[in-house]
Length: 293
Image (tube, rainbow, N blue to C red):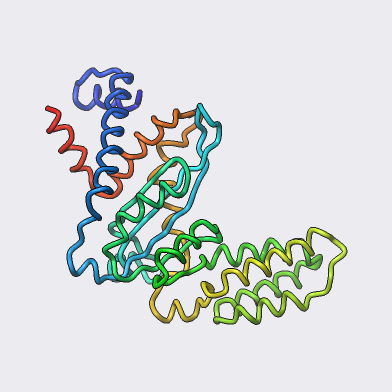
């Protein structure tokens, strides 16, 4: 708020205190929250017929923020965007998503999912990509059983590496084994990976044995979401990088700065404005201000 006050003074010659700016931000961020709740009650998000028929990716993840009332609390962020035909390529190996709709909520996942569903109900084809969070997959199985579900490949491999770090003492053998298993994962051979894990001998380190059982359970639970070759052949993304990067530039750039500790209401109000801005929905804020004037 103090930076905004200084920028306005230097660039526009407008002298507004940081406290005034803070009050305005919280005021309109609060109105946005109430308006969104009313929109959810009345009807789902408007899409054109072409947009409804276009496959859309759905990603969700959480991150911790420091609050005054409840210390560290998880804020959940959702991102919805159309398939790769709507992803602008920067070069052969990298692209940028041109347009996304974001949803953010500080609190329990049921309230967050109620907000996210506002953007999903009219869409005919969904591709849900996430890590192993049970609440996401339980929700997907219950309400979007026809959606394509993909376990983020890099989380799947990360769990593999964490186990190998505890199990193998020889560095070369460990690296070779990880590469072999990752190749099997990439080739739709999740059953082979699970079989390989089960055939590994018991280790003297209890933590290694525990991690092996956890990894087997993780893979068996998510097996239907791990046919990465099939997904790639259909042109699907297999990683949740877009939602992880979104946490940084939608929320953390503003809400996780050094020394910040938010009230619960204040956090949500500022987040609402960030989401509107990054979703290219700032006209909503302008309309609210014009209506008040």
